[in-house]
Length: 131
Picture (tube, helix red, strand yellow):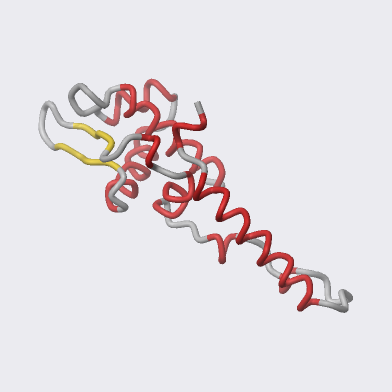
């Protein structure tokens, strides 16, 4: 699944969890129904978010998922990285540029600068800012 779709699904799931933050944990099947996503895929996302310390999971009949922190304290970058993505690896590099470019070092510096700015923006942008 493309990076942006995975991140969008993870953010959608977290937004659903924020709506139930004061009640019992929300089962995965309920989240899937609300955001219209396949349960197997949402479960993978929720597991990664749990391992990253962004959500709790509770087992049992009354089990499900809940947020550890409010969405005002969770950045888009945290979600991106929780899903296993890495800005340094995912962002294009000068190696992918055509051979005829004379200044590959300059291009690499520009791309690194853009990746750094993007990382900073994603770190500053909180999930709560998205809705």
